[in-house]
Amino acid sequence: MMNEASGGARLVIAIDGPAAAGKGTLARRLAEHYGLAFLDTGALYRAVGLAMLRAGLDPDDPRAAEEVARKLDLSLMEDPDLRGMKAGEAASKVARHAGVRAALLDFQRAFAYERNPNGAVLDGRDIGTVVLPEADVKLFVTASPEVRAKRRFEELRAQGRDVAYEEVLAAVRERDARDMNRAEAPLRPAEDAHLLDTSELDICAAFRAAREIIDARARAKTGGRA
Image (tube, rainbow, N blue to C red; front, side):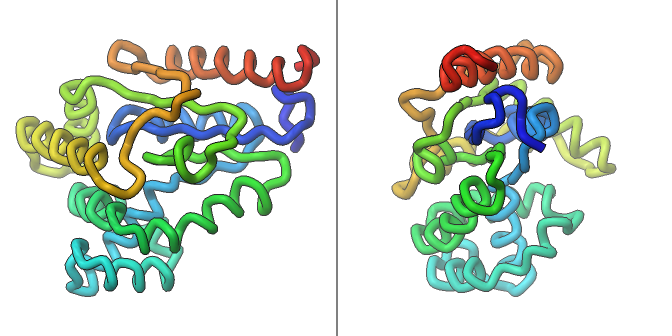
């Protein structure tokens, strides 16, 4: 259906941020609220990483990673192991390779601008800076490493995983370092992104804050008709 926030015009929302900041949950709720398609771009990289691990390949091998990305089996997007720590670590490694990012870039852009004429919500690490630099609204969702590690720890324990909080915190910090310091499309807010720190916000409060930002941008885009 046509989204009401933009008066029926296309609305493309880019949501970036580090692991376990809550951007995925927020992005899904926003997509549902505005009647937009949703793409978890991180799942694409997780699928590449998972495919490599299962094939016995090294995620640090750029050529092998690019080949897997270009032949990616999208059924892996529904695999229960996709959200595990190993898949997440492998995703962070394959995302450093320019060939992998190039292989997935066209898919993400086509999803936002061609496959979904009303617009879409995409979340990831470089949506506002690289994938969709002309997105109508850009949010950078973050939280402290300790808060994000606690959220991830509780999620893993709820899944029956036997992990220690200290191990999860170390993994969060290690991934942050990889994502922020990689040469290809490092994790950083776009210059025109709105910063949303969820350290002390539950999902309902974060959702309200995001809606205020999006609605204000939509009103400006349509000359106040939204």
